[in-house]
Length: 238
Ligand code: BJW
Image 1 (cartoon, rainbow, N blue to C red):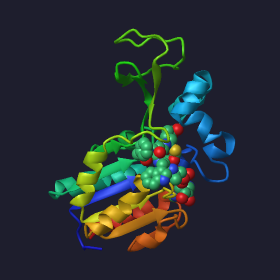
Image 2: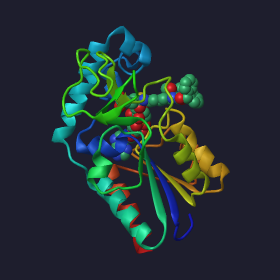
Image 3: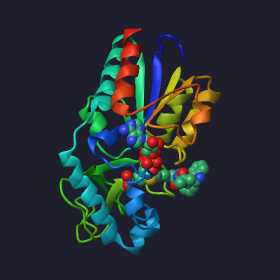
Image 4: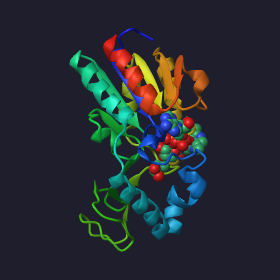
């Protein structure tokens, strides 16, 4: 790793929010152990049973009000402030639909799989905060079409958000870091290869080796609340 990286790109996944009480997807007690992803996280599932999909996201959206950012989220907020203060940049690309990174002070943040706190109108494309539950009975506040509102999240088969911004940041990164993701969902899982092709070293911080562990040049394994603050302290202190 370069001694003082100036242009850091960080990819996070659900593992960083696990110790805040937000479920991961593929772990033993993860979301996909309780739900069939084809029913709740695909456009076809939504078309077949929109009420089920709304219930799934309404429950998870409500759950967010009782969780808080943990030491790993806060460490990344501090890292961004520290690197920016010395003239560099941190781009945080998150696959997470929760808002724990912004609540912990991260500013340069790309939600590539959307945000669960927002709705999206399938008819006019309007995206906005939805304070309350979504349902098939609601009309879009902009185009007034009934039944067109869906959660602002990226389902399987849909194009992730902010891909141009993410790939531009990776192309000029001098360090790529992946935190709390199993590396099983593309295109996010391919970012480490993009970064390596562009010549950047790549570090994995995860509870255990991910599916892509062999692609990283450095790794640390353990709970995010321990290993992320320790890594940030090293980077800012060094
Ligand atoms: C800890 C910890 C602790 C635990 N501390 N760590 C090849 C190339 C390109 C695409 C594909 C491809 N093959 C297949 C595809 C398609 C598909 C895909 O990747 N499928 C795979 C299953 C193979 N991808 C897509 O469809 C994507 N779109 C796309 O490719 O568009 C282009 C296209 C369009 C049209 C046609 C064709 C191509 C979209 C993917 C959308 C994913 N959506 C979800 C749901 C979002 C909404 C919601 O939240 O409900 O995103 S699925 C789910 O997985 C969610 C997550 O963001 C994502 C990643 O999961 P994550 O975060 O990694 O969680 P886990 O559980 O897998 O891992 C947690 C990790 O944390 C583990 O490693 C633990 O060890 C660790 N951990 N506790 C540190 N305390």
